[in-house]
Image (cartoon, rainbow, N blue to C red; front, side, top):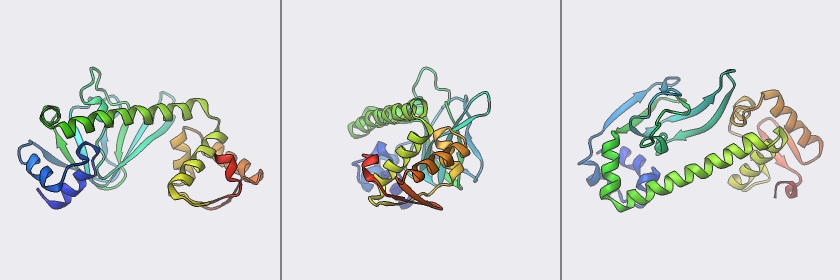
Length: 222
């Protein structure tokens, strides 16, 4: 198997702790195929069955949920090494809860469910990693629901700043998404997001300059 594919698979949580050699030997006996999606192409539609295990080898995907009123929420973004919807592959109802779209030209390594199940059965590392992956997904979705349902727009923006502070370890935070993309990730209107940002700035908690946010009062985010 190509080195770049092995390197991408080592980023996948399913194969954490495995060496390149172990992965290469393992995948020699696994039926697989590679699928290419162009930027903007739908990889999976909401409501369609999740019939395979797809691991991103290259590119980036966006998972988005929409309601009857066409209101959309960005659930997450997936990049190299991520597996698409692993919790739905073996579910009784394996209908996709989100639409997955290619943000960039994307290459996917595709395994049939039976092949993934065989790997889980024969390899204790993969089995433990799969259980941990499902647990992490539950934790992520629980936190996501809490923020979407219980937080006000202002609290959502404050949570975003707090999360980025933890990631960037700096009082000066650089946002890598547009105002619209950030609003979509919280399921609110762009105007509501901007209004909440301005409220925090007017209270001298932050200073905003384009995509740069300077934290003036760190105690508010602890």
